[in-house]
Image 1 (tube, rainbow, N blue to C red):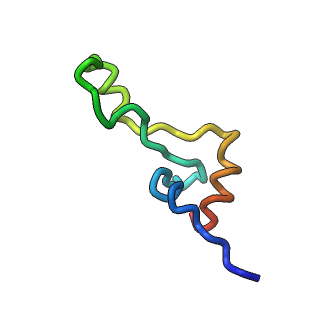
Image 2 (cartoon, rainbow, N blue to C red):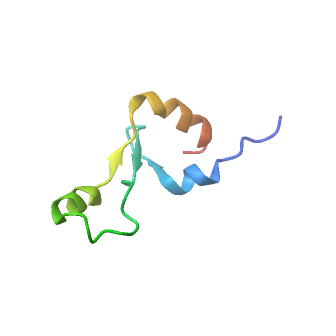
Image 3 (cartoon, rainbow, N blue to C red):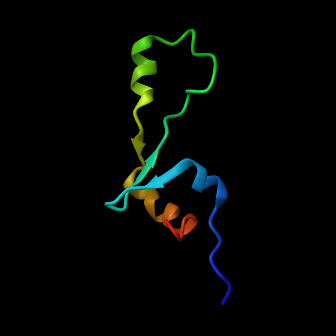
Length: 65
């Protein structure tokens, strides 16, 4: 049986927490931030959590965590 391969795009974007959930970086933080308010930029700074319905997909993409 061949080894399971890690999805490299998902490995760069998601990290598994100790409880088994996944941490993600917020979108819309790369460029054209001058028109955004300081409050919205500050709120995008903190990492978000992936929804529970998507964790099964990430478990398949990241077999080694």
